[in-house]
Image 1 (cartoon, helix red, strand yellow):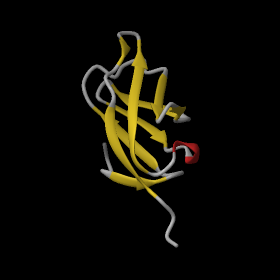
Image 2 (cartoon, rainbow, N blue to C red; image 1 turned 90 degrees about the vertical axis):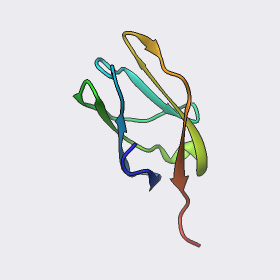
Image 3 (cartoon, rainbow, N blue to C red; image 1 turned 135 degrees about the vertical axis):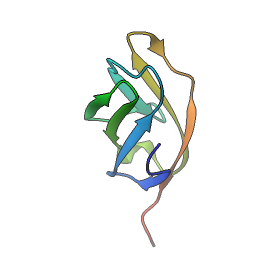
Image 4 (cartoon, rainbow, N blue to C red; image 1 turned 30 degrees about the vertical axis):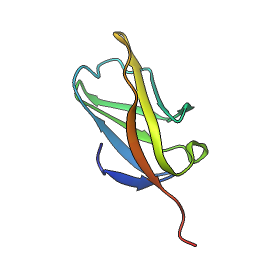
Length: 79
């Protein structure tokens, strides 16, 4: 992921292998939209505010199926 930590509403890059034809990225089960397919190794999404804060679990679905869950940290708003 880039950046490695971000806040809700931020755009984050999901980096990896075999990301072509990504149809869904979920953060804590909440769809991260819109999905911007940059390449077969990068997908950009907006962190959904409904995903919560702290460590969340992310998965990605494409033609090959659904990925394993990967942890990502979403920052809360400053008090």
